[in-house]
Length: 320
Image (cartoon, rainbow, N blue to C red):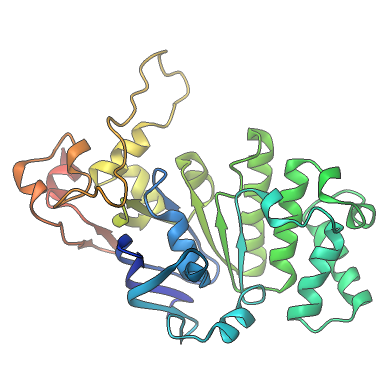
């Protein structure tokens, strides 16, 4: 049994349905990448997993989310709160929104230990510094007493990761954790997360728009488009033989070494808003392979070994 399973979930916010029939799974020791353009439903998936949809007026309106055998969609908030920060942790994309500017970063890491692990203050401080050292923070004892504004963006993101690790979680959901960082620091943060999974046997969901990061870090990939799953497969399979036209288009946007200037081609059009989803396949207005039936039929997910693809023309795409 997988550690976490999303079973055909739908999410509603008022009259909007930003996620529709989404199914995913991840086990310990795995890194699942969730990719797609802005508006595809990546962050909404993170909020659904972490039980934070009520903060934006949303709810899981259909399907099930099971974490280590526990059905989360029926879980009382008090019980969910005991999971969050301890067995499940969230890393957000902008560390400045996750850190209290008027408290030292060390106190914020310590608090996870005292609240979720029952540690005394001194034990929490020692554990915090130990985790900071594991995250390659130089002079961790000094940094422990500093404030967020005294640290660089990359260092602040390490502090947020330390907060996530303090509760010794089984699952970490990292929502665009490197977006605000420069390329060199991005690579360092991703490598830290990968090392944590391999060393500790965590499950990591890595939400990103960067297919290069996916290729570097992930074991399997879920490609979302306009609130629906387009493709789900092992990372090697995704890059070697992408089956969904949208997956192929995303991979086609990756710059390659030695590529001629001006030869990089983007995806025409834009992803529709939640109140403007087209009928049928939601990707069909932008799809070069679309036929009239694509505007009418919602493509069912087809299983191809361990992979799943939601495209009526998957055979043609795979061999086209």
